[in-house]
Image (cartoon, rainbow, N blue to C red; front, side, top):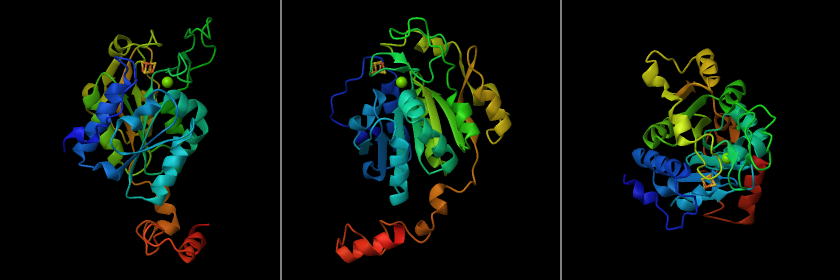
Length: 293
Ligand code: SF4
Ligand code: MG
């Protein structure tokens, strides 16, 4: 499928050179490779530079309030398990404001793919330090440097029970597209944390800074076993000198949240005999309420 099918006419307001462009491209490539029609996918975001992404795609989109895309996406996946649900939001939205939802989505295991535009800074509000900023990171609002330890999202995801954990880099959209395909094919919650340079506010974690450190796990070690939680835990803690990209952890066979909801065992609400869309009579609504409330 031609990825241009997902192009939207909206004017893009990202800064020239922003890593978000590569994430947008990678998502389109990943959807095209899987031959997913625009109406079959929902992209959910929150608030932030990267959360503008649904506006730039010709698919179903939902911009939620700050930090809330994961529960909204989980609800959408429950209502229509056939929908391909993808969350795209930044590190502040995912790990800061939405940190609680992040933890519980990892252990809940809904069948959604979560792409985090991790630029280690709050870009939209002009560069304050974020949960993933390294300790000592200097900004205009933290002139003495961040006093807090950086959050390690991959280690947190593993500890909280995530069944798929990967890292991409905005300088390599092809690898990122492969990771997104793998995440979408995974049956359960898939976290893809993407190192995404903010060229306007983050003058430390630049494309060059990342390029001098990152390596591809599968190329460096062909024997790497992504089903091993011990190996993933070790790789999740590599930072500073060397930073691995690729699939750190992939465990199949764990029931998704949707698998365990008894009301979904026979059919999805949208495909069932009751359809508020086809037949919105009050008695249909009452019957539906009896099943789900
Ligand atoms: Fe991208 Fe940073 Fe510009 Fe936001 S401020 S659009 S993250 S470069
Ligand atoms: Mg950010």
